[in-house]
Amino acid sequence: MTVKVSCLGPEGSYSELAAKKFFDGNSEILLARNFSDVVEKLVCGEADTAVIPIENSIRGGVLQNLDLLERCDVFAVEESVLPIDHRLAMKKGVSFSDIKRIYSHEQAIGQCLGFLNRCLPRAQCIFTASTAESLKKIDSESAGIVGAHVKAGGIVLSRENIADEKKNYTRFLRLVRGCEQPKAHSKMIFLCAVCEHQPGSLLHLLQIFARYGRNLTRIESRPMKGVFGEYRFFIELEGDILDAEIQEMLEAARSDCRQFRVLGAY
Image 1 (cartoon, rainbow, N blue to C red):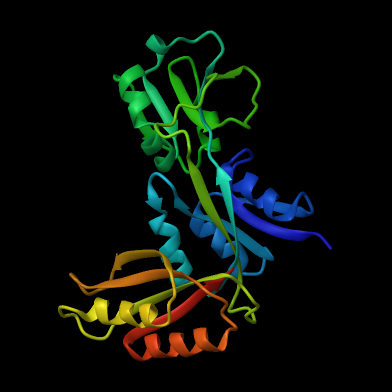
Image 2: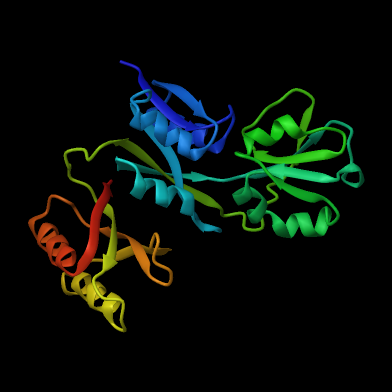
């Protein structure tokens, strides 16, 4: 049975590359116009699963997707890390001096600012929905930033990766609808908000994980919706969600929070 996978398009996006990596070609790729649409295709049943980027080794968390993970009735069940190789894409025969505009996804432009400031200091940077989307904008005065895997007629890619940091990776999560029956995994991610907004509240929560000897691999703060100056936290830690001690630890953490929800195990 072919699995229907939603991910950010158009064809040639890093998200499409990640989706194919998850299923090794045994899938039908549904290309979405933005990340909200990616998740909506899953929630409404059009797709069986969805793939979204969640963190980049240079730019950090993809905050929009953390919010989607919280807001929508989805659960992360698998992760994959993809090496990112950004290339400058231009029309054949066009030189740097001709370029007035650079199109690409916000993350890609941010990861290539050093190169852009050195080589194309006068070019205006314009964000697109994805790196692959920038291919549609390329003309005699416009260039794009795309993945090295992209091929398009009449378009020439730079010989080298133009990212400021060559060791550049993006982590993708595969999502399913609802809260899938937990299986043995090595990591999990959950959302929490401490009970009291006062000194030491977060420390008290983190000490619970320390007592159980669990390594936190990531912690990201996001503003509380409708409460200025207060924050909720996305925390990822190492551990098997089916382990009895882990379950005990999660219950202890839950009792220390006014908001607590496991968002994935992978």
